[in-house]
Image (cartoon, rainbow over all chains, first blue to last red; front, side, top):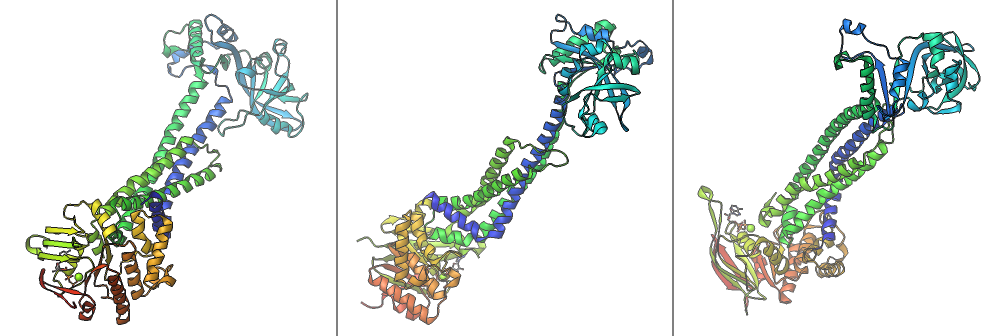
Length: 403
Length: 229
Ligand SMILES: Nc1ncnc2c1ncn2[C@@H]1O[C@H](COP(=O)(O)OP(=O)(O)OP(=O)(O)O)[C@@H](O)[C@H]1O
Ligand SMILES: [Mg+2]
């Protein structure tokens, strides 16, 4: 009795009851597809959020004035401003070895106009190092220069969202936009970064710090200092270095009275990834349950099949089928159901994950494909083996007497 | 020469306690090679029970049984299945063909379980079906065949593996007189070729075809005689 024969007999068994076999496969199919698709959506969401944060630079720290923890007004009055001097002090090869640059940033909510179109955006006054610190590539024209800053030139570099709102299809380079009543010459445009739904990285307008301070915001506190670390790995080290320097400059006594906050992009990404990871696992768990239900479906069908075919088992035994032959026959039936069901499930999932759902492009996790398939086959084996073993252990005469 | 069947003090008890039934109460029976034996007796006298034990489908409660000189009593299930496959061809009253499977595949099955190669298996199955006069019905499903034809397929399946012993439990019980004739003629021909046949029947004219009639009453042999010398 060779294995090919047994497989053939198993396949005949499946073909003999197509509707029932089909429905059983459907159970496994849906389970496998659900696992892969849901994991892919979770993963896709994580990839999308991560890349939109990465667009801002993973090796940047943002320092903002103010405190999260202290609500004490008396302490608040002693807060020191973030100053350009603070930013300059942060670039220190000895005390801050991992800091590449520190860029002061002020921002103002302004309305910019160009020939009748107007657009409300946030105007950023900063230094040329802003571009590399914020991961912004200038794709046409030039970025700001130190010359622009030193001479308080009225130059501006615009992001794609602002450009399309104000200029439409016209080339913005060399034209003059008026922001908060101040005319600026457009010297460059920033390459599109793409928006991630909650954050439009292209909605930016960048001008020299000196210009913005002198003509719009005045010389108060900076809104933030953008610190560029040498890499995303060193961003935590850079975080402690800048914190130490600023603590010293601002005379911080304890963490509660610290008058600035340091936001670490890399840390933010990992926090968000952790959160999404939890949701992905939850989705996967729900899908895994449906896979389990599919497995129980196989057991059920195999039990029915065995009961219904008890007489057939008796006949086979009466003409000399061994226990192992019967066992393999039914195991193969269960396996084939789950392999085909699982296989189609994988194909279906790969098709479905090409479609974006709610703005998220699913990204298939290869391990989930292998995992779901292996699990579905094991389910076939595991859940098929009980009924198969029951069938194989029947005494021939008992099986033959079965009505 | 060793007899094909040698039964000594075979008993069979079903159930236990209040519902205990003694189906066989000490059967001694020897059947020689080439014999054609009919087993008769009233309903409930234990004929089928005896036949199932002879066919290694069931085990006796006590007693000794050897088939072709092999002691059957202490074989395990796996060894028994080999005995059933090689030594015994069983024909049932209710045909017992495997549904949704062609006549040819049904007849091939004992050879499949014996591990005979596909080509040889096919040739032998075709030969057996031709021998029972069903060469033109090979690819039909059991439900597309008449009762008589189904029983002839069952006969072909029983003899395809060339067993030492052909067992038939009321093979003509579900057949009309014409089909009964066909099946009995087949049995007669097989006997003429030297096969050992044991057949249960209720009908005297069916029994008359055999050479020896064993009658059971209440699980015991009450009469054992040769019909023609
Ligand atoms: N599985 C069983 N469980 C309990 N009792 C049984 C079982 N099979 C048979 N019997 C009993 O054993 C006795 C003999 O039964 P058996 O089937 O051998 O009779 P039989 O001679 O073949 O009858 P028939 O001519 O009606 O087929 C009967 O009393 C029957 O009720
Ligand atoms: Mg009977």
